Image 1 (tube, protein in one colour):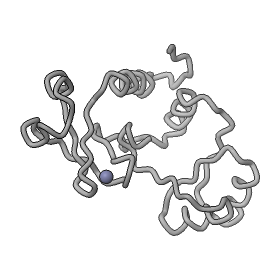
Image 2 (cartoon, rainbow, N blue to C red; image 1 turned 60 degrees about the vertical axis):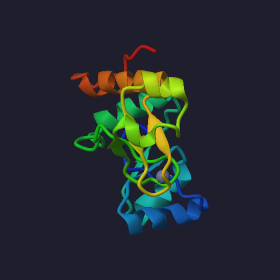
Image 3 (spheres, rainbow, N blue to C red; image 1 turned 90 degrees about the vertical axis):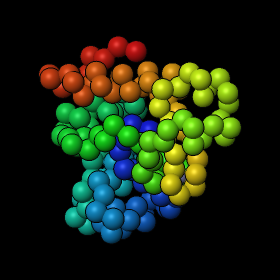
Image 4 (cartoon, protein in one colour; image 1 turned 180 degrees about the vertical axis):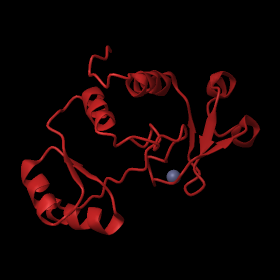
Length: 146
Ligand SMILES: [Zn+2]
């Protein structure tokens, strides 16, 4: 989700701490665990139960439920530290990335916290196209090809 531009947390804590964590941070808890879902609802946490394992269908479901409205920023969060990445001109990061990437990638992002440089590789572009198709699908259906 971070690569897609959503602020997401994946805390490395036991399941029974997750409800408290989502309450404290005001986050939506997304889980495929029915027990965790029940516990969260009992404690008044916002929780979404997702039985679906397929990432594309999950995103479709999140979108259909209105959970993605106005959240996609078009930019990304650092997968390492969840900081908001800023777009950087190529010159700034020249020498820190492979030469062929520097020549071929269109956009570079740098994390202001850990300094990690990201670029739009073909796998991310393909994934973004997929997400765009899902988000632009007015019917909110799940008929999305690979
Ligand atoms: Zn970072």
